[in-house]
Length: 74
Image 1 (cartoon, rainbow, N blue to C red):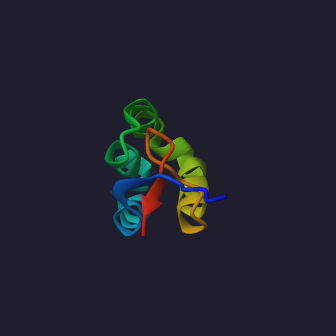
Image 2: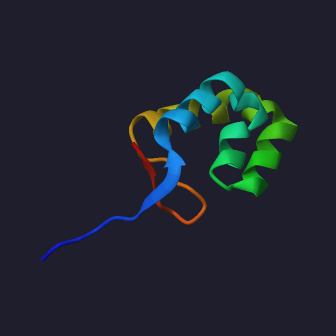
């Protein structure tokens, strides 16, 4: 039995760099198509940094996905 996981067309490295440099503005969330939460991050400055830190760790360990739930392309 073979299982396949869908991979997003969005780059893992680009998402990681956007989160690191522009995370408080939610740019990485806009990049992967999560517009609603991107706007919330923009308004709250990334949850005062906590939300950005959580997203950064999630991206690093490979648990961050795009809007459709697909894993980021490495």
